[in-house]
Each structure stands twice: as C-alpha cells, then as structure tokens.
Amino acid sequence: MSGGGEGNNAYGHKAFKRSKSHFADRITADGRDGWPVEAGRYRLVVSRACPWASRSLVSRRLLGLEDALSLAVVDPIQDDRSWRFTLDADGRDPVLGIRFLSEAYDRRETGYPGGVSVPAVVDVPSGELVTNDFQQITLDLATEWSALHRPGAPDLYPRARRDEIDTVMAEVYEDVNNGVYRAGFATDQEEYEAACAGVFRRLELLASRLAGQRYLVGDTITEADIRLFTTLVRFDAVYHGHFKCNLWKLAENPVLRAYSRDLYQTPGFGDTVDFDHIKRHYYQVHTGLNPTRIVPLGPDLSGWLSPHHREELGGRPFGDGTPPGPVRPGEEVPPRGRP
Image (cartoon, rainbow, N blue to C red):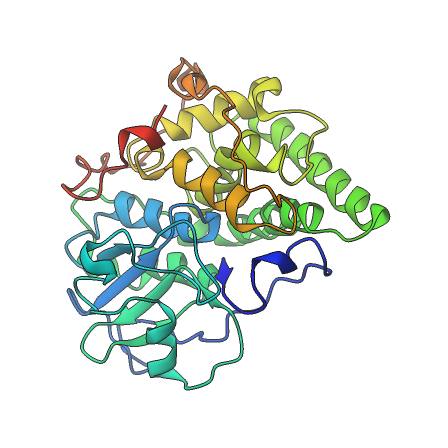
C-alpha cells in the first residue's frame, strides 16, 4: 500500500492501477541478490491497516521469525511524505532512526519517482530499502528463511501443492485482493460495476470451494489462506461501505463468515489485526472518497470471536507443526483495535 506521491485527494479521481514493486531484490539463503538471510540484519516495516503488509505480519508470526526479523509499525494515517513513525517515541523508528519510511527509499535510490509502499524490508546496517515486493516477501519468508523458522513452524508453501496454490492465489489477487481496490477507486460507473461484480463472482466461487474443505488448498493453512484472509478481515469494516462492494456483507455469507472467523481465531492471524488502524486509515486517508474524514462506528466486531464450527470439516491447521507462541511483548494490538 503506497503513500505520498500525488496526495490523498487523488483517490477516486483517477483510474486505479496497482504499480509493480520497483525494488524487487530478494533476501535468499544463498544471498544471490547480495542480501543473504541473516538473523537480526533486516527490519520489516508494516502498516497494520494495509492488507498487503498484513500478509507479512501473519507469516512472520506463524513461522516464528520474530527474533530473526524485527518489526516496525507505522502510523495508519500517512501524510503526503508517506508512512510515518509517529507511533514511536520522538516520532523516530528506534532501530533505523528515521522519521519517514521514504528516507530508507532515498538511501537506496535518490529521487525515486514511485510511491513509498509497505511492506518494506530495510537493511539495518546501511539503512537502505531492500525490497517492497509484497508478492514475493512472504513466499521467501516461507522458503528462503527456513533455517530461522521456529521448531514446529508450518509449511506455508508446500512444494507438492505449489501449482495449485499459485493458481488460487492468482485468481484471488485479480478478483478479490485487487478487485476491491478497482471497485473502490473506479472513476466511472461501468468500471465500478465490472470490478464489483468480479469481486462477488469470485467470492461465490471461493465459498463453494470452502463449503466442503476447511482451507483453500489441501488440509492445512497455506500462503493462499493468508492472502485471502487479509482482504476478508477488512471486508465489512471498509470494503463494503467505503469501496462500495455492497452486494452483501461477509457476515451474510455463512461459509465465508465461518472461514474468516476460523482463521481470525487461529494464533498468528487475528492477533495481528488492528481494526482501529484499518478503519482510520481507509476513511481518513482516502479523502477523495471520504472528504469529511469521518470514521464510522460500525460494524460490530464481536462476531469475530463467536464459534465457527469449521473444525468439523477436519483439517490440520499447522500440518505436522504446532501453533505459534504468544504475541511478543510490545507487538500486541491495543484493545481499541480488537473485538
């Protein structure tokens, strides 16, 4: 999710096109791009408001990479200089020593013309951005970082299932993850209707798929579930109203409601979600869509903690592994962001 650039008023006034990740270096076990996996060397910068960044939050928790990859959480309200570290003392990230994520981008490439996006992985010794490739970061955490995974970490990208996972993720990305944005930022009726119809057509297909199986691919949680979850958890809170994806609410679809609650209640998923950050970001930053910046009171969040009964479908959430431990001190979601 980008910040800065043309400012927050641009949303809703120009056709939406998701930019490709400009900095696509990879952090790998063999260091072939010049960035070897190394405990303590890198810092993951996220916004809890952003679905793309939230993928990496979930993966990091499930894989137990907290000690190996430190975490910085930015303010959900960015200004035209982009994502800010105003949640930290003195408005500076305590590790990188910077006020704005754009400073790490500038150290990598002076005058970079694109937006400043999260998730971003920054090299702590140099202060340079390494990658903002949101599609690849979590795949590499699951595979290239395996030597640093916790004991009992799940296999989120099992080799035998990768073709199926990739196919499902591509469909989810096009119609759901990105589809809600194409609907929300559409600039004419035809564009909006096509995108919105596409969102719900794909959600109906996913509901059919999930009616008889607990997870999207196989009987364990995979990267595909992480990518769908980060959109579903935001659906009723922001996409239904703010992005006009309002044919029905997630709460009105029995299968998707239960599936998303099942994941929310799984350690590593819901404990990374901050509904306060989510709502304030979308409603206060996208002033082209919501010029009053008023944040709605609803929806009621208590349903996220209600029984889902998905365990009746079987499935082994963590495969042969185990759930992650408690959230690290200092990384807990504040009470106002939880149901």
